Image 1 (tube, rainbow, N blue to C red):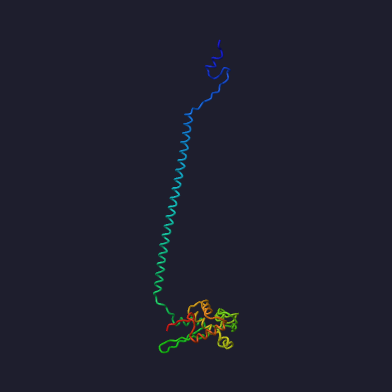
Image 2 (cartoon, rainbow, N blue to C red; image 1 turned 135 degrees about the horizontal axis):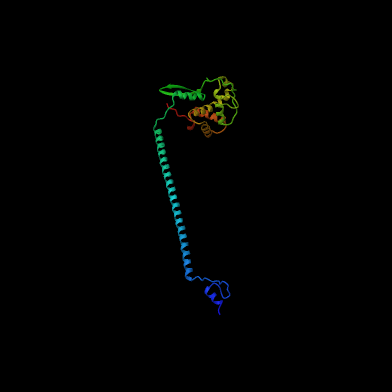
Length: 249
């Protein structure tokens, strides 16, 4: 009589010994190929999205570059137009100034400038021509109480300093009174030609530094020798053209 084997076979859950059985599920080659194709499609979709985003990013960068170039070009164009207009305006002003006749100083203005430099001008008219002669102005300003002494120096610049401002706390030589001049007449007379030349050039709108450099350029030696040479050239009318003032008759 068969009592145990049939139950095990019909139920399919136990073996001949009554224990559960373990089944091995085999995957067919066709299933493996399908999974591989699915994975490949997924990777292709991801790659396609990456390429699309990259292309979009490149387009944005290129668009931004074009916008920046356009803005720079517009700015360059505006600057060029503005500079052109300003240069045209400047050239027009220069042309208008160039064609205007020169403005001559009035006699009162000339006398005022000369007086501020310690000089006065005398006008004499003979045979229809006017001649000018410069003299030291008579001081009408409040008396300068500083000592009227002349210093010792070795440069042309110091001579100008002595004439205009004084050296070592002394009175400027241009403010010397007649009594002051008599007290140092010899030295004052020797230095006067240099002072007069410098004051005349400065009065003619020449910068003091320019005047000093031109004198040192055309005359060499000590200040005493330079002054003597200027005195001689002034008498002979042979001053260098840089040191001459052309005056309208």
